[in-house]
Length: 131
Image (tube, rainbow, N blue to C red; front, top):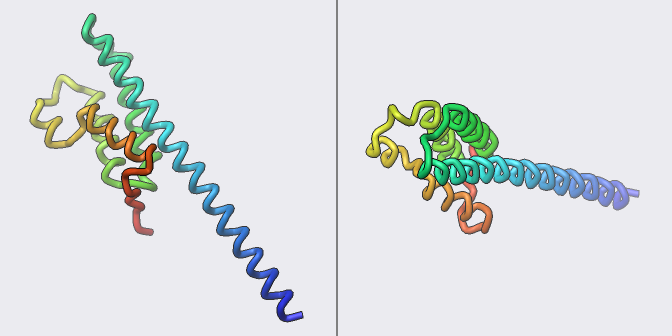
């Protein structure tokens, strides 16, 4: 009887661990999806910029996308989340930023894209926030 109780408790514990891991994996995939959307939209809009000025609606959309990506990724990487948030602030008024400010904040699209690809490929260590 005692062994059955221990076995059942271990099964319940294992189920809780695997469920928690699946939920965390789903949140991580969602965070990467939001980051990917922000990177992709930025690339598309920057590509258009070569032919025309960036429309205010596009700037607003990018600002929102980067902010949402920052919120989603914050559980997994505080530094990257803060930079996504800064990127969102940048897109709310990019004309107010100097190249030096952009470089100091490390928010160039190539840097953000590189980190996203490293996260996708598992080459970048996830820096989870402490609870």
